[in-house]
Image (cartoon, rainbow, N blue to C red; front, side, top):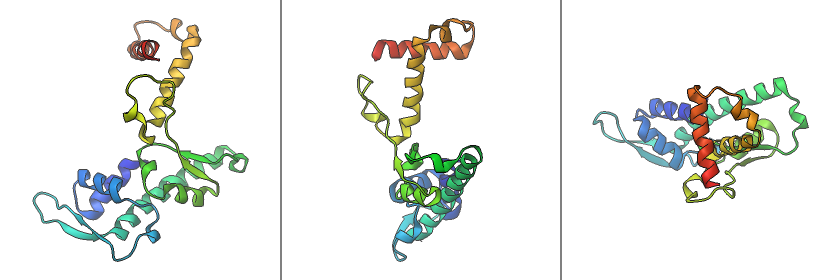
Length: 182
């Protein structure tokens, strides 16, 4: 479950294209519908040449909130089954494109009963043009690449694997890139 599910829900609920639904989600999406004025409307493009229509922004937010609640409550249940969440004192860090939805941190705090914040990738160890990576959308990817780089210190991680493995060859190319650029 993730941001793609919200986009699909909006496309169906608003009778619009997935591209327009994604644009609506990222530009005006809000995860707490009560914070949206009831009289505020947005124009939603129609499908296949149909006319655009006005939709209440609160309705858009209700769709987003319902799906985000489902995602967060599922995550809470899964985490609570395997961990004692009361032992987590640092709070929750949200990453990914959907973390940019307005008020997601507040919705998360309400569901998990702990502080939440939006996580941005640490780009301080990267060289070159990194501005495009400074979004929560890339936090996990950057973290995985840092982990891959850290594994370079453990030569057995690489040298013990057969060289004919296509996954390893791909992984080795990533590592080689980081050796040259970090």
